[in-house]
Image 1 (cartoon, rainbow, N blue to C red):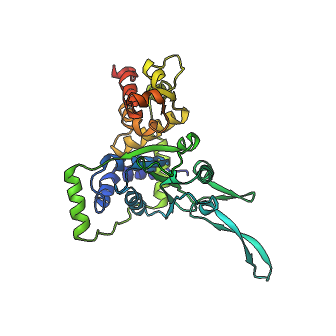
Image 2: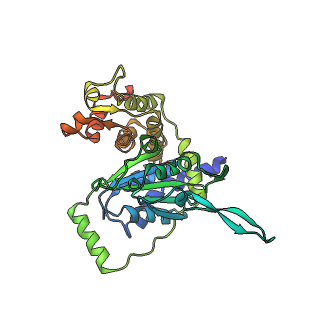
Image 3: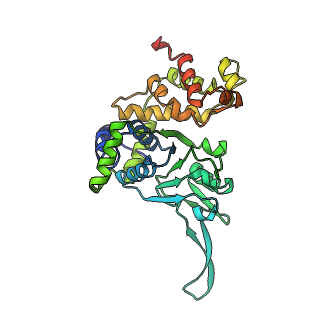
Length: 336
């Protein structure tokens, strides 16, 4: 998408002013979870897919559906189960009768042909079915019987998984996890927010959410985000942060060698920079900084760094490792 200077400035202003309006609409049905909402918005503005991890009953599905309504995007939901087949996601060919009275195979599109696809409890389906999403997430297309079918744009996969109930689940392969820009953790609400949720949901029906954008607006935002300038030192900081998470590298800290069996790849640094650009625009700034990188390190890295058995035995989590990396990796020279 090519934008004129006037269109670019109008899109920047629309994006900057959108945060308060989005918060106002989401507050009709969502209480609290500001950090999760911000990370989800950043991934959408940057054009990335998002994995939402949290216990049941924390409004993960409601949040995704509400976001789709705010952006006025076509929404589809798939409940992932152990017996779900790849064709249930992508679509299948069926025998139909033509106008000439003959029979021919016709492709019937599956729910993946949408703007926002909610993959609910994605880790409850076997790897074969999970893999059906890989091509859609990376190439924005589906291949069936040798024919390629492009997906609608914009296209986002927002997947949820329950980290508590592990029986009957299939861990997502690293190749698919890496396709998600963020892994957003949705935690329990503070008591005051939880009281507000109970009062709000048991006293009246929520107000309808008003759409604020269109699909074309979202595509313009993607273009604008990529044009945000980032200093080379900030890019190097993002690359270093991802690189030192890999055991066996020359500059890897000792605690990474002890606790980590697999580190983040290059796509982590790319997503750190894209996310930092979107976060800067949402904050009303025209350039991304190292603070944006640090703020997004957890959602970008937590599903790309795999801790080993020693870390689990010592009670060390992935988030613990990432926080130590943020503390130890030096920032750009200007900060020192």
